[in-house]
Image (cartoon, rainbow, N blue to C red; front, top):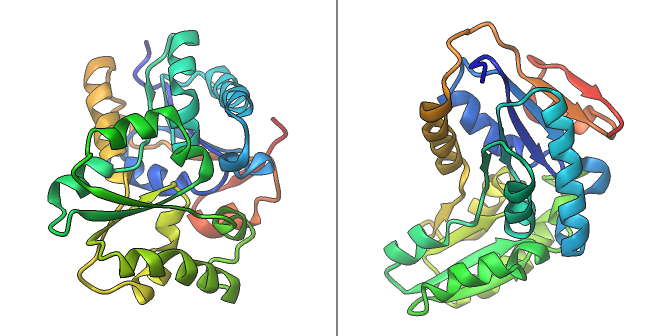
Length: 257
């Protein structure tokens, strides 16, 4: 394997850039290719079979770009498809799951909240994880409409604020002290969430943990020491929202896949 091969990252849309940023910050010499399947977002409302099909489509695209490992920067795709991906392809996969474990371990109230998609909360993998922490009360909330608003560039809209209030109020009333963000889109909502929840509630997402796991895998398959690599971004819809998220230092290419 050539150490200079890129790391592939895919998500149902722009949300996985929250994961990509952590990887890029930790491993700045690595070439990265980011794939935003925004045309099919959100994955959270799709069947398991459809999620697997889309995840394989994205994987095929990234392998055709000669990626040496693939980060599934989507909770729904990870919890529904990563087993099938690992069985089919001979390349390392790194998934992203809601950070239930650290929240449950450190919770003082023994009540934590998780905001995630329907596909993640209904998945077999998620339910197996939560069963391990039977001593902790987990308040689950499906984030209906949140991904769609983020994908449409309406992060700070009145509708977003209204939805977040309705989703978070029951968690606050239940006395949670940790809020787990179970979708890679949701870290972009942290400023709005912070305005709603009390200061003592800690917010956890999985971005840094995924970046560290990527680093661990690279210890086995080799690092890229070339610091002249520009990240590549692809989307199959209008690139404007993705461009706004990542900034003008990078080029977003629209491509049908």
